[in-house]
Length: 212
Image (cartoon, rainbow, N blue to C red; front, side):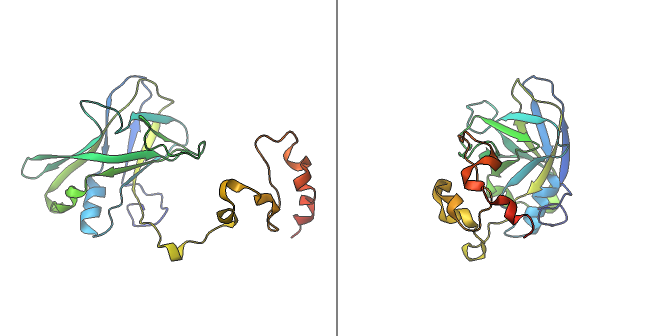
């Protein structure tokens, strides 16, 4: 959700430029507007969604799994000159290159095809939004980076109720076993296949569907 409340919107709550310096250092992302949004909109807190906006590089942070003197955390400065600290309770990246959970990895990637999800101690929701001056998510980069990035901050939308989810064909085929046999599947391929996609015996009639 973006700062306008639009689902899948493009208006980030904030954007931070992170340079590729290949050194471990602290990076602070501005969460001020997002934290105020959570507090002003009851039941809106479901975590932070970080997305790389330039479509180029990937920034690698230490995740909450790393035993560090300064693990990922949120700091909030109030109008009473107080600094309040809230720990990151969970974090993970959503990689398109793996089917396994990355929640236990020691690296947290934010790239063009790898957004990150971060959960923060929800005690922050008890604060008065009018007293919040600054809110910053503090992360530490690793010593190896992959280009400059523009990291956008978004809110995570609530999960749909089970009855609202429209399940696809693959839902009935665990691990995609025998999925190609479904009558609505036009083209199927296996990663270890010896023949090309369009030459496979399972895809002999794919041309007949071009005009459908």
